[in-house]
Amino acid sequence: MSSIINLINDKITANEPFYSLEFFPPRTEDGTVNLYSRIDRFAVQQCPPLFVDVTWSAGGATTKPKGPNPTPGIVRQVQEFCCLTTNMHLTCNVASKDQIREILKYAKNNNIRNILALRGDPPTLQTELSDDFVHGVDLVRFIRQEFGDYFCISVAGYPYGHPDCAIDTDNLLHLKEKVDAGADFIVSQLFFHAEDFLKWVQDCRAVGITCPILPGILPIQGYASLRNMNKMSGVGVPESIIKEVEPIKDDDAAIKEFGVKVATEMCQKLLAAGTPGLHFYTLNQEVVTLRILRNLNFWKKTVIREFPWKRPPGEKRRKEEVRPIYWSNRSKSYVARTEDWDDYPNGRWGDSSTPAFGDLTDYHIFLHQNRDKPEEKKKMWGNPVTVEDISSVFVSFLEGKIKELPWITTEISTETKRIKQDLLDLNKAGYWTINSQPAVNGAPSSDMEVGWGPSGGLVYQKAYLEFFCSPERITPLLKILEKYGKRFNYQFINLQGDYHTNLENAMAVTWGIFPGKQVVQPTIVDPVSFKVWKDEALCLWISKWASIYSDGSPSKELITKIYNSYYLVNIVDNNFIEKEIIFDILKEVINN
Image (cartoon, rainbow, N blue to C red; front, side, top):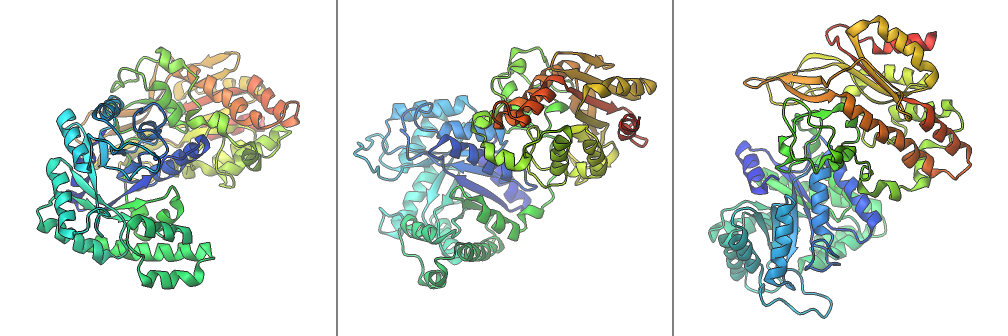
């Protein structure tokens, strides 16, 4: 797992502004599922956050990381499945040294290495305060004494002074004490004017604090949010803000618009003054923050993908450079099912016979199997009673009219636009596509549609198509493919295991050539892994689609019939130089 201070210093050296986000653990399982989705929306943007914070749950005990407090588990999920570096808040005011030690051991064993060390607010219940940790600096010292430099430690700073410290000078000296004890950077509490933060940073530098200081931005999201600001800051909201909000206090949209405007202007001043990055308190509501980030042009930055798929930031998975292409649109499933692997080999894919790979018990990551809301799915997928109705659902997804399919929970990739019309034609004809890529012959690695890897390289890929097909079309499709010999590699399989292929070994379908490096092959097709993927891909017809309808309904009977009889097919066109003809041969079957 990356150390946040290293990421910050890299950005400062490169003079690249960045942003980070804070979220808090929801109190319900449904809320937690939604939180992962919200965070993931940031993770898949062109300019993702440098890191995210997860606060220490006020509703849980400090004592058991696997017990009532959900924070460590959420941090682990965000790192592994949203692929974001994560900062775990940790409060100590009601904990003993033994309790904190156990939490930190759990964190280290789960590749969590970034901690925001806090004393914590006074407990609302009759809870005995800690004798071991009276102030935040005590926690910083303890972490350094027990774990050395393993953890990157951040601490909170207070531009308007700490509520328990009346003298500003003492407030700054206490902050310096935390930095001297081992804190790597500071995140400020909220403030109302850019000038207030910048003056406070000057005061911090004057007393000898040299580490990075990030401004904490809490956008106004509603009238209640404004009252919250008043409570959280410990000082009154400026009269100028109250005067502007009062006339629109009953208009939520107007208040949000005002909040976006005020926060955008404040952030622009901070960045212009040389502030290295911005930290947003989202209150688990991302819409306003997203609008501010767009205003600041963070969403327009050019970011080249390291690989065609997102790699989790943990040290163990940093070794992984190859994946089967089948899980391209369900990467969380792939990560969950391979997280117990001992290694992630380079240059070729690893042992697909490992029991962890074949286990299907946890591929419905984030509780989706039990937490999907049937009515929401029915709004997207309707109540199909014919195969033509199913085709219409796939077409609607490609046209952007619905946001997901059981096999695809992300937006259509930019490269798909190159073959979108061909995909539409196939889906209308009853070939239901769930994965594809166009042929690419030596595109620059900086290409915004298909590029990945270091600069100065060239990337290649074979045309690939994966779809569901009715059993009646299997024989004519096989006959046409056989006419082309080795031009195409293919795999056909159904629920019963009827398998047809001319592929014997794993084969790269995406590769890149970069200065000073060997050929990198990040995605492959592989017969063994395809048979495992088949179980998951077919099962989704039942678990994600048929399950939203009542027993005996026409829709459930139709989808169950498809599950039992249709084939999962993938085809690779090995000639990436000439015009791809995958779509032509499928249309030939259609026309015959």
